[in-house]
Image 1 (spheres, rainbow, N blue to C red):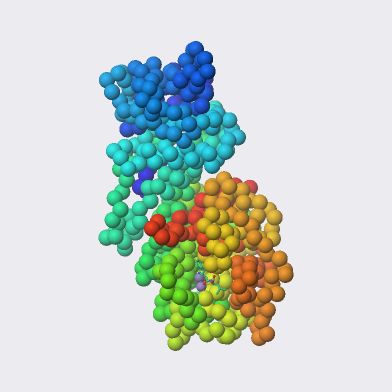
Image 2 (image 1 turned 135 degrees about the horizontal axis):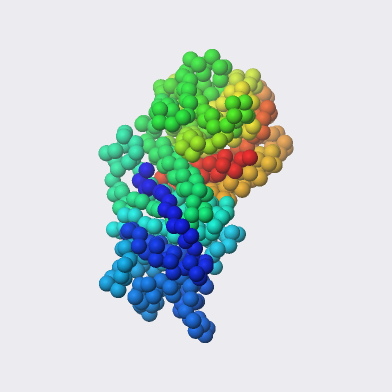
Length: 534
Ligand code: BES
Ligand code: MN
Ligand code: ZN
């Protein structure tokens, strides 16, 4: 972990009550910290700057000004304090600050985001990101973060979400490639940020909830970092074997149980479709099963299935050369499953969750599958492979049949499945496909809560027409129209025994261009989904 997160509880701290305001501020100011981050509202600003005839100065800024010997007034006169939402104003300690141990105070404009349980998360995140940006890249090593809403005596689900999101974005900002992966240490050229420790201040009445939210947020960041590292690693290092070893490494570090099946076992299971993709490569395929047993023994698990193509050349239906390097990211579904399983174990989630990953390379060679080949899937359905570049569905379909044995409560597969999904949704939402309304609702809500959003696309029977084959039960492509939908329709033929949803993350799992790198999505979405399951 590059940043540590923790909590510090201040008995009866409450910035809303004028009675407690002074003593709350005093106890915060006497904390030893590089920077005290203090949220103030529009009302605090008006009470201080005296908009429209306010005579009596009141509120957080006014009280603070008197404790800091006029420092806030000084900043205001200079025009540094403007009271707008997401504005920041950094005050540095000087001689007039008597008895203050904080070296700096960062005033964070919350605007009208204040003290209500029902506030907009995206507005909050804008404010939080402005604060986090101001803390990073300089000399500040640690900070005490105090938003007035964190002192509400009963912390609402919304505020817990704000804490998790603050951590999610702080972790995102602090991510550096290679620092955790021994194989890549020599490549870590980006200097680590000096900012190392973020402490959330809270009121004793909400101490337990605050601590839990911080633990959950920290676990999400750990899972995202792992998913990002796996995505960013080059394809000559991040092979199917490497993914298997990574999963086994987690079993040593956590309570996760991990099993990795090799070629012989995959053959014995009859996964003819998966093997048809793997056979063009010199690198052996792996089938990874990760279990988190946090619920009761007999409780039906939620199963996550991730596409793990460690490099997608297209096979004999070879891809064009441009940006082909980015096909190392074709295992980001697998990376998100490994990351989510890690988060789940770290937060000791009280549910049963299983992660399943079919992983191999898609290469052209004398042994590779040809367009026109027909293979038999584990389900017994035969598949006519018309395009070897539509390989994701070929490895997923056998994994989807395999997971029937778990009698799952629900199955979600995650895959960088189609370029067509990028055309449909760009890089904003992941594509969501499901006929189960409760899964659609829960995944959409988890997406909104974690700001890792999804958008539903159709899955109607009419699209199945495009997958007809004259020679086998089904073809592996359905032509150019609605390419993401026909890919999802193909998968749906293997999911009849349970509730199922498919996430196409082709547009959201990584960024191209100057900012090339994995995003860690959809780990936040999946962890929030699991947290919110009843
Ligand atoms: N991994 C790709 C999908 C992809 C392409 C994701 C570009 C992100 C960026 C997938 O295996 C693939 O090649 N899909 C084909 C399907 C087609 C042959 C029906 C595609 O999208 O072109
Ligand atoms: Mn492909
Ligand atoms: Zn692919």
